[in-house]
Structures are given as structure tokens and as C-alpha cells.
Amino acid sequence: MQTKSSKQKSNTQAGDNSLLKEFFAEELKDIYWAEKHITKALPKMQKAATSEELVACFEEHLEQTKTHVERLEQVFELLGKKPQAKKCDAIEGITMEAESVIEDTEAGTSTRDVGLILSAQKVEHYEIATYGGLAQLATTLGLDDIAEILQQTLEEEKQTDQKLTGAAENNINYEAATEEEA
Ligand SMILES: [Fe+2]
Ligand SMILES: [Fe+2]
Image (cartoon, rainbow, N blue to C red):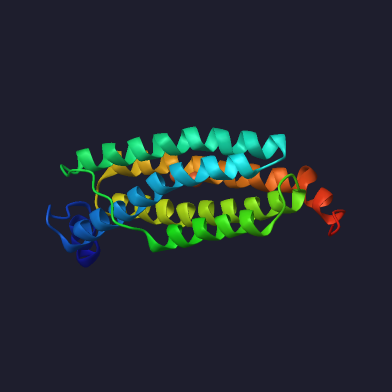
């Protein structure tokens, strides 16, 4: 019992320079780079999409993503650190895949939309994993205000993922299934 309570104490009172807190700050730099990169990728995906529902989904998520960047800046501020970005290889790779989808498919086809949805969902799932983990870490570090901010973004990423699934299920996958090679 005593061991448990002292363990809890150290969890919620992690020192300012704890290794875990440093690790947390490093991971924030990664997702900060990723979010900024996504604000550049989404307009390209929006331009390449055909379905109105998908175009609207990208448009809306671009605005949300700009807020995600701002929220991370707020988090850095709460940590007393300057916002700093560190290249996220995973997001660079996924957005490069989205660019090849655009290159490899014909404009105006649902097949391209299917590919764009697949790429966009890979981005969202990366973000969901990252924000889920970081929000949990923030709680462990006793940084409840930061955990709450990260949780807000996490919810928007989840909603976007569901909207993308909805767009695919409503029409796009069905239409793509009827498309034939020219
Ligand atoms: Fe985001
Ligand atoms: Fe997102």
C-alpha cells in the first residue's frame, strides 16, 4: 500500500527535468512538424478530390488542422518552451504516398477518391495514435491542462476518420467499383 502511494506521488509530481517530460517535449516537436506538414498536404488532396462530400471533408479538416497547430503552440507555451518542429518521417512518408495516389490515378475518378481517403485515413490514424499516447503521458506527468488540449484534438481526428469512412461507404467505394480502365 505504501509502495503504491509513493509511486502515485512520483507520477503526479514529475520534476521539471524528468526524462519522461523531456521525452514528451521531444514527441511534441514531431507532431508539431506533422501538423504543419498536413496543412500543406490537405489543399493538394482537396484539389485532387472529386466527390463533394470528400472535398468538404478535406476543407473542414484543413481549418481544424490549423487549430491543431495553434493548440500545440499553446502546449509548448504551457511547458515554458518555444514551439519547435522536428521532422516527422512517418507523416512525410504517408503524404508522399498520397501524392503518388494522385499521380497514379485519373482526375475526376472515384478510384482516385478511394485512394485519397485511404491516404487521409492513414494520416488520421497516425494522429490518433500520437495524440492518444501524448494525452495519456500528459496525465501521467500531472499536466492536466495540456492533457485536455491534446484530448480536444484527438476527438477531432477521430471524427474526421469517421467522416472519411462515411464518405467511402456512402458512395465513393461503390462508384469506384463500377469504374473501368479507359
Ligand atoms: Fe491534426
Ligand atoms: Fe487530422
